Length: 341
Image 1: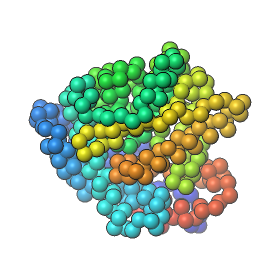
Image 2: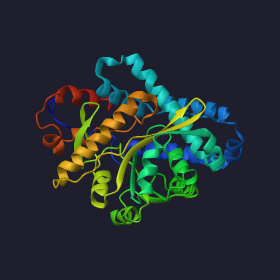
Image 3: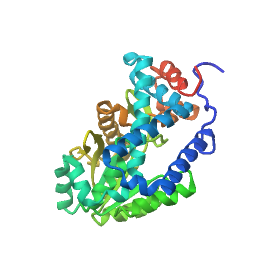
Image 4: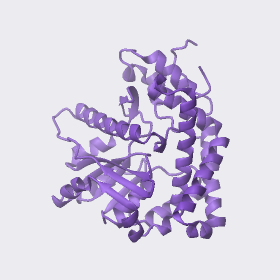
């Protein structure tokens, strides 16, 4: 096998060791909530943050595969701009952030509309309000950046947006049921990823909002992300083009004393008659906006996910890398996150 031949890394896939680690982590969180839920609810916000940071540190030490994945992704995205030491330090902060986010999610019953009103500041929300005032459906595109669970709760309970969230079902079935209950108690509807596109179309045509996480690996189309072709979902653009809904990129990041929601102006979703070109243009804009946000808050994005996986699969090489320019270096960096060089 030559160095430039894409391969399938060991332990990948929904049934592989990576999925086992995910299910184990979810079981730990579920047990934590069942055994110590009352204590978590009584923690002050600073104490909860400290506990979440500690929990993330524990995960950092125990999740070697995820650490290597994150470091490989950082090598791929930043090249030589980050030293090995800087990458390792950033990966630890990523784990610590998601430890805090996990604890915050388990404390969700504490996040009443009154608490969120005080804890969350917003920038650019007037753009969404203007679209809703026109009676238009709204496609809200977000990412695994900051705290997307707080974002959903804030949208539904504080801004009272009639909202349907599309989310992937967690690997652990028990944890999946618990998560669904917490989410639906937040005031928004949940549709499993891969569910009915017709239901999303109905929601938008009623003038309501949907929220989509659009930063995970996909095989729909390949557009740049940190200068590297990335398999990207087409759904947000297709739904907006089909319904005339307004499309916004927004995210909710953790701050020293709470959270900050940032919303972009509406993206241009004008249909030109070339659907494929329109989808590519819109989703390229989404990736540009996402990259800008991740560069501002690199420790709050999910570097642990195999974001560029589809771009390095042999079946996608011609589409993802039509000129082969930069492929060898990028492929070597990507493989470094899977224990191979």
